[in-house]
Image (cartoon, rainbow, N blue to C red; front, side):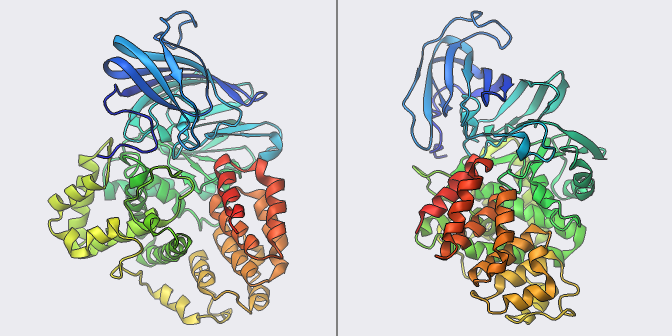
Length: 580
């Protein structure tokens, strides 16, 4: 197994297996005052290399988390110069037989894992809000540790927050601000939030959390989560995390969802009022098996997390809402994959499933490729072997790699054992190591898909669109030529600029901008000032920036709203606007 190019961790050194963490949340300084105790899996000696980013290290010793600062024996340590992607290596010299290291430190006000929101940036408008986002390599800006999914940890944590705010953590609530995670997780799944929060139970194992003004809408929108959970268990085996709670995030959350175990984070953009976007919940739930239970060993094998999860998500969707719905979503995924492939046309090596990312920031090359190409690879294997055989393979995959981290070679070895000859039949080497999409990739097929395709590049009649859901609309809009000369007619007939489903709305706005239909610009400005989800920021800023007449609008909006976006989203938009 190749070392993780995004970590200073040395495989020859001791491994951290348990974290004790105490954090005092200070909104005034936008920092956390922390004590971290790293417990080693076996007694160690010599250097221990840890990943950090912008941490102010005050002291390193061998004390316990609740001991006073002078309660342990000081250990020699050295913080190396910071590098642009990895941060700074913290090297601690372990005495003979060392079993733990205690580090006193403070996070930076600009920690890449944290976003501090003012009251004005929340739904309630009265109290501030704080949340973490550690994927892919941002846990090191929160805790000094071995920030690689190859190293899994259990943890106990205590968060001290100012009243009347409430802290939540992706862990079991132990009371009095204390949290316990008994299952070992990769560091990118460390997650917490602090704010004015309320909850509603939506099932025996599920609760929805959100700001008080949002919680009832969120509880209704995500009210089918228990049916999803029981369906997923029938497909993939027992759920190993006890609870599947949901936290509806502030609008600046950069992703659709983040699969933090026990407490999934979801964007409020999913609150469409009609449950039309809840397949994102199915995706994050599927991660409970593929990603959280079985993790990729590094970002170079990210497809193992996301390709498997998209496959599992669509199996859940098929079981709940039928094969037509699943096929429509696969068609949207195919279109997203085509766009991602075009984005990397000058860097075809990044369209492989097994990538080489030495010296490359995983956030900068994040795309739909590991999701959708990975899904199609698994679909090709399923088609070649039959569903019954492939389901046995899935069960073996979860069973054999449970609570482990694997790479693509581990996958192929299991595949050869459980599905002998299948990789050769689908040309597995072309899928894993070849650029682009193999010509034999399975295309999604569905009656509803054919009906949308039959409309072609014309404006549909009211009768044709009468039964269209959000997925059909998204497919239709994404398929139209650019520029499209009938935007005014389309908008007048279907009032697309006023849509509340953001997936449909952003598909429409991107088409309209590329077609110089400028009546949509005020709506674009509204969305870019309201939401921080990168799925929407990237295409809208890109569409504005492509045209000389609207590029100044993009630059003006980014200057105005960048402080309200998450640091990861800021990095993405900066790179997009820098490209000419």
